[in-house]
Image (cartoon, rainbow, N blue to C red):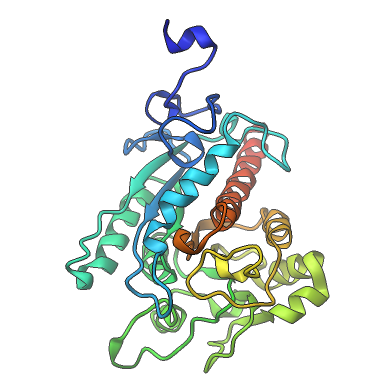
Length: 322
């Protein structure tokens, strides 16, 4: 008996088509992101998901190097279903592959930023939209460098408990100061950038608008969506989601948890509400599965990426109708 006799094929990650969803048990098979085919052939590809398993720039609990694995595993639950809230399979309208993981030499940390940037540039040069699974938040710096090389300075929409604007004196880089360095390098269009969910105090704002954690609760999802749209406007933008923007009740598996954060529903509804912005790339970072329980954090992170892909698919579908 072959797998086709059962009415479905297994291991869609290796044998499936670029378009269309998979249909295999969520508890089995090769775990690519949402069962997308593993491929480094970018012909005809609209979006690429890849992992950057790096956490050597953390200032508290390590473990985010295992984030891409955990997010892929959690994403299997989406297999073969119309996706909520769109009610559609995004892969009917958009060809997406899983590139695999960035090649990083952990014995040569000085080479890591360049390795991330170079591989990201290769993907972005194809015209594909890049969705990155981290990794700690430091990886956003080389990712921004790669995106800005193609698109120019970008408005940054950052969901986070931390501003990540600590000093980079002496050239020191970490997940806590990538925003400072990105600002100095002119990567971020600060006049159109915004941070949401901040629950710590950093030395400076770098000219970025801040919606702190308590304010986010007061204004709710609609208020956050309106503020982001108002700030970004028509600017090309980059979305970066540190999973610690969520309260530890919703994301215990992260390196620097801070109480008083958003719920998973609030974050996802806000991302859904800003899908129409001119996104040029995105990442979701800081998932550290060693501190997780029942994949709570990984499920939230995988759904963040899934919602972003749904938004891209909707845009492509509307464009194809014109």
